[in-house]
Amino acid sequence: MAQSYDIIIIGSGPGGYVTAIRAAQLGLKTAIVEREHLGGICLNWGCIPTKALLRSAEILDHANHAKSFGLTLNGSMTADVKDVVARSRGVSARLNGGVGFLMKKNKIDVIWGEAKLTKPGEIVVGPMTKPVVQPQNPVPKGVLGEGTYTAKHIIVATGARPRALPGIEPDGKLIWTYFEAMKPDFMPKSMVVMGSGAIGIEFASFYRSMGVDVTVVELMANIMPVEDVEISTFARKQLEKRGLKIITEAKVSKVEKGADSITAHIETKDGKTQTITADRLISAVGVQGNIENLGLEALGVKTDRGCIVIDGYGKTNVPGLYAIGDVAGPPMLAHKAEHEGVICVEKIAGVPGVHPMDKAKIPGCTYCNPQVASVGLTEAKAKAEGRDIRVGRYSFAANGKAIALGEDQGMVKTIFDRKTGELIGAHMVGAEVTELIQGFVIAMNLETTEEELMHTIFPHPTLSEMMKESVLDAYGKVLNA
Image: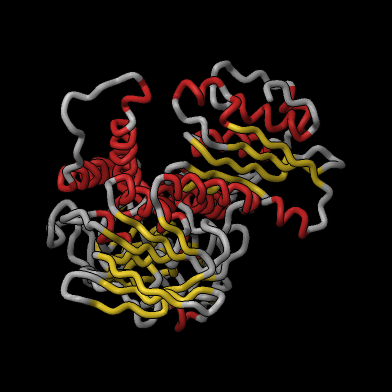
């Protein structure tokens, strides 16, 4: 007989494993199916290991500017690419083991293999397509693997993978995705990065800090196109000061491969063309949902542009089937997947007061140098919606803590509804803004007005003081500028 559960989750990324934990906390018999690594792309190949790489780059940047802090290094500071990568992989391995511990702690069954939906409430788990199961390979005796399993509710959390452009498909050698870019066995001298979203610009920033000659090619008019134009323009200037070459309103139309290099043919909006020869090219033109080979078509599951269509609670059009995270569409962010999963499972369990996902309050963070973070409407989107707005700005150059840190290049921008005082958008560029943005996220969730923010006491000296000053500026009351 098929083993039966209350909930089966397909995929153990941040959305999947957090959803499983919450389901277990609610008393539901829970299993999670994984074909490769506990923790998914985020923990093993995305969010976490990239931040470890960027931390190494940050320390190297500081060391290279030691004299500006009154310090002299005895000897040169060099980066050993193998050690940098090894540290990054070690960070992921440590957290991967932590997810396994959490599964055991919460009595969640882990089923190793490739899951396919066969009918409502049933999956068949086949052999792994990528046999790298933990704790060992093959699946140890007594550990759940291939077979048929049933559940009252099945949640698809299979994540996404890099999108490839026809004719410029990654080959793992000369054309990289984030997989190869994260664990190089040598440091290229030159590189083209195709795409300036979070993935592309973070790798461009990392490799530039490592001394690589980097050119970024972006189809849109601004880098990091989802960000407020004023913020992305500021970030571009700072990145260019660091030596990045950035070409916007352009596309890589063709790539010619040499023995150990590529030549990228770049077409600009005005019809001009140029070629750039570099050691490697990183393809960072977005990601697409992993919806293939799941049996969705046979069940009649509705999809749109490569993602599963859901409502605000994760429900698909098929009763008992749900989807969360990247496979359920943008924004494709780990924290969105986690929260979406909690909403989904709490709704299933009948927890009172569960609210649907509000995508307007999902923060976005890009960990390049300088960092970029935002939540809510950009100035352009607010105006496009016909909102009458107030906009406040405050510069890092006027903040004592930023100057003391040697990080005086940045800006905090806030957008308010003029009539109600509602905070409808916040945008930042500069040091540690990925940590600061949560203050504005909380304020938006609490429906905080400008008056309440103005009456909040921020500690001094801190970078967070700029948040209040930006609010004050929107209302003509700025104090330290």
